[in-house]
Length: 615
Image: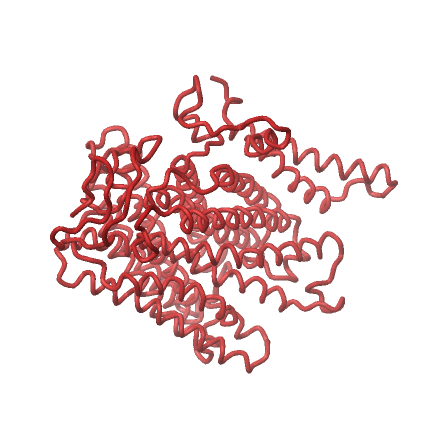
């Protein structure tokens, strides 16, 4: 079997050819128009970036079925591995099965998590001592900026993996509402990653927020970032549309909204944010790109623009994006906790509605990122109050989790440990949040390392820990084998205290005056020891994740056979064989009870052929 039979290889070749075609096209036009010089870096690379994405999609085959359909060629969906090829090939090519796409998303997300983490380890090592050790200030800022977007890409891909794999299974559906659109949305992410990695070679040092005027006057690397994130955003919009349609239109008989698994509620709220807010960051980045490319003055005061407009557009997406990142993770916590507490989920309806409340209020708080920006002072108080209000639906979830734990028959396998770790870490982020939401304290702490510590606690507690809990929890369902429990717990017990030390250490040096996004600091601040501890913690976290990767790969070959339902879950996906067959459900399911009535006698959630679905 040749490499050209892999869609990924053909796609990367297509992206390279598309990029070269863009460079050649712009140069040819300038030659024919008699323009001097004939080489214009900015328009050439922008055209190359756009045509490169199109070339990738053509090469990988994400547009093939639609192209055939337009000329009247039948395009029936193929089920199963490609004919005459090994089963693993489908994971490197276009495949319309939601389980394959979910794994593609998840593995790509883990890859980006390791890349983003590697950037962090490098610049954290530099920051552990005063003075510049081995990085220049520009290289430091580039790595810092790359870390930000690589990590955020990893989160969005991880969410896509969980949502694509689990939502149809939890609904008893055969697939997503739009399988071809699902595959297209995933494959948009690969050229997006290529563009982001390409930007590294041109250098860009404005931080992940890419504020003008730095992003207007900086290197052409910014253009690669703009079109990378625009492509990533398009994937998010299309994926959220698909998930909303699937959740609202493909539930089985008897599954009303308030009998739906809580993770589906979290994905529904997340998808509503993605569908409505993501366009704003795409618009903001296109406006900066056009200002660079065409001389437009959206953010140039001398041309009638205003730099603060970019901040409004950016944060109108980027703060709701925090809830895009954490709502699925909070859904995972609520999904797993009652399984290992063996009692009903406390306040199910309140948890479900709190996700929608967070999504709604999340659109009203973007201004708390801009207290120091110079906008009208009378806006500060409304944004402060709206931000503090978000704590109410978030607090509902915390109280519901405590109510579920109270009096439960708790067991502590690795997924449960990561759920409890997520609650503890997210609590650090939650308690530090009101400090930054309050105008008086934020004016002092804005742009300090306190913000870095708060943000990492929120993201790790709201996404990373739940993501690892989900990987361990559904690993037997995906592979049919159990992971190594001792190694899973070793991962947890290294990572959790290391993260506590890292996040609290970041906030501590921030209170002492350490600014973020700088390559060096004054020894007189007295923060060097704190940076050493944070760096050690970062290395420990990275090592623990490598343990997890080894555990997952090794256990897939030699792990104990899991059986259909090792956790005794009531959820539909656990009532079918492990690993899940090509056609997930041999017979339709019907919902006849409540999803989380663990420990209650004679309680049944679903009825389906061959599985009782009770506790």
